[in-house]
Image 1: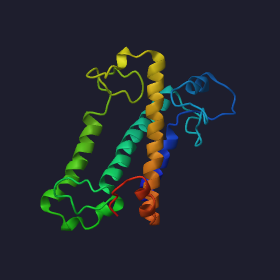
Image 2: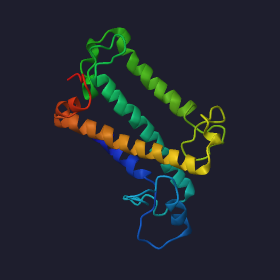
Image 3: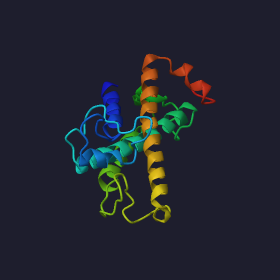
Length: 204
């Protein structure tokens, strides 16, 4: 729990992207202040001073990490909600929601137990063989199309592209805080008092 909390906090703060406000303006900070994600009300936001001595390459690495964490967190929030409403893969009906999913795994059918290592293997394969800019065609950190798909992206003007990038970044940030909040409240023991208000059919 502690490691997961630290990882989420670091990932979310790390690439909110920007160098701190209040120091002398430099070409480096001016460039970062115009990056996607630097929006009101926080604007240029780097509470941990991660970019104090950083360059563009370091910024891009943090931004790619933030986007990846945001995408994973969006899936995690919906996964939490889906399992909370009772949805399960065949053979996984006895698996609990949230941290309860790790309880009594030894009592699951053999076929169901195989889902966990298969999921881990899939995550590793995605990380090292899919979720990379292999073609070197990325327009921005987190652009993993690799010249294969574009979903109409190439037809958007620059203003629309910036708007859509900001939407994804902010949704990812909200999801990182959201899944962290769900994890914390579950450990505090009051998750059952929160979720039923916005998820009909939540399975306690």
